[in-house]
Image 1 (tube, rainbow, N blue to C red):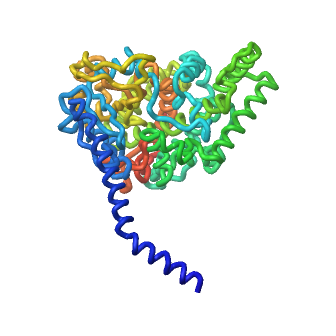
Image 2 (tube, rainbow, N blue to C red):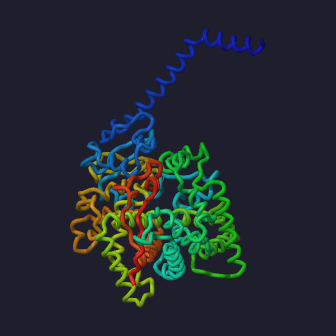
Amino acid sequence: MIITNLLTGIAGALTNNLTEILATLAFICATVYIWLQYQYSYWRRQRLPYIEPTLIFGNLKGIINSECDPCTWFQYLYNHEKAKEHPAVGIYIFNKPSLLLRDLELIKTVMIKDFNYFSNRHSASDPHSDSLGSDNLFFAKNPIWKEIRVKLTPVFTSGKMKQMFPLIEGIAQEYDKYLCSQKVDAKTNSTVIEVKEPNALYTTDVIAITAYGLQANSLSDPNGIFRRNGKKIFTFNWLRAMEFKAFFFLPILVKIFRFKVFSTDTTIFLRDTINRTMEERMRTGTTRNDLIDILIKFRREAEEEAKEGKKPFILERDALAAQAAIFFSAGFETSSATMSFTMYEMARNPDVQQRLREEVREAFLSNDGKVTYEMIMGLKYMDNVVKEVLRHYPPLPFLDRVCTPKAGEEGYSLKAFNMDFNVPANMPIYIPQQAIQMDPQHFKDPESFNPDRFLPENKHENNMNAYMPFGIGPHNCIGERFAMLQTKLGLLYFYRNHYVTVCDKTAVKIQLDPRAIIIQPVGGIHLNVVRDPLF
């Protein structure tokens, strides 16, 4: 009875005040609409070319709604009729005015010449809820970023690559054994494999041994703890997709919803693994010329600085563990994807694959079957094949920066590029690198797969300034050498005893996952793997 009377009273109150409630809601909606319309008039008020936004989403509707993959969407923006012939075009990231750069000279200026005005990425994680995700080289902001970058650079010199080479080659040999252990059809001497997974097992083991000094044994135990945690990072279900979109396009949501680059379980695993390995190394005095050795050096230097009364960043929160964590996540996923896309293109271009295998065969024979660092560096055709794969499929199809002018300055002037506009502080800047790399103005017949475009005699037909799969300037990928080395070694050992052809499950054209910011093929890449030893 009491509940009935209560509900009756509420209903009566709502009925009596329905007009006021509806009027209030209408006022709120109208206010929000007018505010958004004002926000979306920014570029018109600046009298600069812009692409018309969609209400709420701005110019990101296709990505946020997962209507299409980021490569396709940024190509759409880059090739938009309102953008053509302009060095830059205005866009909106939700309601925030942003710039999409198109002109190569402007891009070079922003990324290299005037880097100090654009020294931070727009993408970010929250240091309070996700220190492992925010304190690493990728997401850290200046001046912390510069400190980390300077100290990590020695890990990735050519000298260090030579020292790590035996470790990587040992895993590549295990990768070859894994492939050779797969059952094949007696008649065709082949089997259909989704190649991304074995490639990820290989790169996971490489990262574990080179960064952590540990044998992950993913190739012998595909459900091992390293591989399980790696999968969690890049399995783009609905929630994971929204987290990554927030990291790159709307960092304010990261803090509100406490999104994390690494899940709680993965954070605990990586933190404990890194700290335990470092403590063991420091206790025994063992050195391996790997990332852990560098992190130990950081720690000791920071402890000395702390004794002098300084407060070194490297001792705060998870700063040390964060570097090994991002190396793990970025290192295994991007290289395994590149290997997989390479195999797909080889299956679609058997003449290219034959040339590649012939180069591999000659390298083995001329080196008495031994694999050396110099041998890998001498595989020029393989180098061009991988470069062409990265032109089509850069792991991250866009670059982002934010304007960071000095105190007291109004912004960054674009007058040198015939644009009467000062880029204000904190305005996001996007460079659609994959779209640029597929522009016929820069690369002849861009849709074709042609490794020979990177030959010296053909470079006049292709603008290599437009090639930036690892980024350019001080913020470029620090692990480029490492990524290329582990990718080439993996391909070398794959093609030693196998090659690929298309099968019924092979897509005519790669369909990229619209939920994945780090590009991934929908449903994986299924190929017919043929066992055919070169010698």
